Image (cartoon, one colour):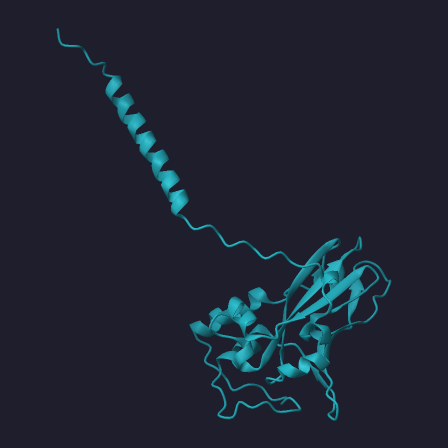
Length: 229
């Protein structure tokens, strides 16, 4: 007598086969998918040689003084090649209250023996993109004092917009420092390729205030010299 196959057996076997294949496919895809690069931990601002601290706030400055550091972050469009310097500013607020910082009043003070001091204002992401993507002058040699005129206009095309996005993503883009937290981001200055003078420069952060507290915060200044040794 021919054995009888249950009408429920065949669908069950097909389901089991399908489940096994799906499980194998999922494992294969998981192994083939490249793992996301590990994020670099934010250093403690107090551990950097270029920092100032008082009233429960530590501010450190990490200047990008080599072309390699820009390539790792920006690729082929490098602020370094355009004569700009990016400085990673790190804020560690150990207070119980948030602190507001006025980003527009920060300055880079360049002091060279025999020359007048230069106070440089930070650049917006759009200004960085204009300088980086503009056509380079025939004579790229640095000049001092740093020219105060703007860069030649660059076409505001898709490439420009994408680069502005990259610059803004890496920039210090908040003026509020949360309590018991570390905040950091890049600030950009046009130093017209005077990278060797960063050893004689300092960052000034003059305008900070506790939120909902009349107690003033004193002036911060960070000497960049130790970062270039």
